[in-house]
Length: 224
Image 1: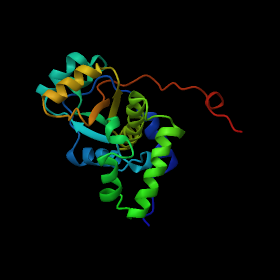
Image 2: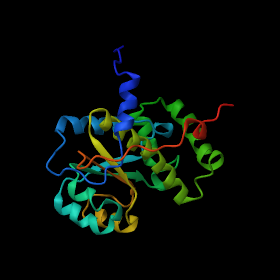
Image 3: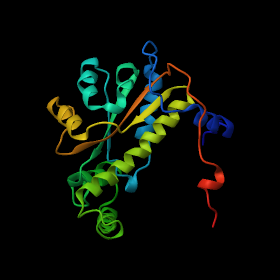
C-alpha cells in the first residue's frame, strides 16, 4: 500500500484557501495534467450503491459558453473568465429505478457482480427507493437524489483543485429548463437520460477574497 504523505495541516490549508471565486484571471490556464487530475477525483468519488449517476461535460468552447451565459445568472463572471467550466449532469428517474437497463448494466458490466448477487442487490435497492427513502413515486425527488450524489463528486473536485492551488466556484444560479434545452439542441445532453444538476468553474483567482467566515465548532457539532 502506498504511503499517503499529505499532512492534516496541508489538507486544512487547502480548505482555507478554497473560496467561491467570482472572477478568474482569464490569462491563466490550468494544465491538461492538472485538470485530468481534478476530473479523476470526480470519477473516483463515491455514490449511493456505487451507481455513479453523473456525467461531467467540460465546456471549453467560447461559442457554447456564450449560449449558456444569458441563462446562467450565477455565472456571469465565471463563464467568460474560467480556465475550465464543467456542467455536472445527473441521470433521470427512468435510469435510476432498480429495473432500468442502466442499473442492470452498472451491476453487470461495471461492478461485475455475480448473477445471484445482482438479484439480491436489485431487491435491496428497489426496497430502498420504494420504502426506505420513498423516492420512486416522486420523480422530482428521485432526480434530486441523483443530484445529491453528483454533489459528492463536485465537492471532491473542488477540494482536490484547492490542494494543488487551483480555484473553483460551484454554481446553481441558472435556468434549468433553458440550459437543458440548449444542451439538447446542441446534441450535448441526451434529454431522455440526463438533466443538469449543477455547474462548477475552475481557474485562478483574479482578486484575493476576504477572510473565510464560518460558524464556530460548538455551533455546528454535537456529540451524543
